[in-house]
Amino acid sequence: KEECMDAENSGKQLDQDDESDKLYWPNTSVLTTRLRRLITAYQRSYKREQMKLEALNKSDRRRRRPRDEVRAREAERNAAISEKRQRWTRREEADFYRVVSTFGVVFDPIKKQFDWNQ
Image (spheres, rainbow, N blue to C red):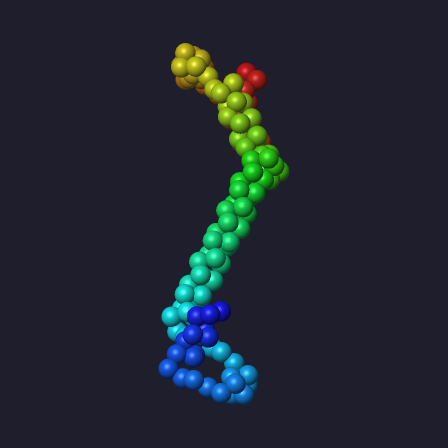
């Protein structure tokens, strides 16, 4: 650019032959400006890519959950529902304890189980 050529030619007048052999190098302020622009452009593009990837990952997670996770949640729900169905009311519990304490339960030492048939 002109900035590079001006920086090199300022203060020095070289012959035509010498100028054709030399390569121009920009001064430090021009290099710094260019470097800053490159860095900010890279950061912007990198940030955009990261945002796109995050958006894709979010939508993928919502669309298709891992099968194991879905099955585990379904099993938890089924367990909670069956537990609620099997849970006794306070009255049923009190009746059960009253009957057991009144009549007792036979324990079979051979089978190591209670005999609930009697």
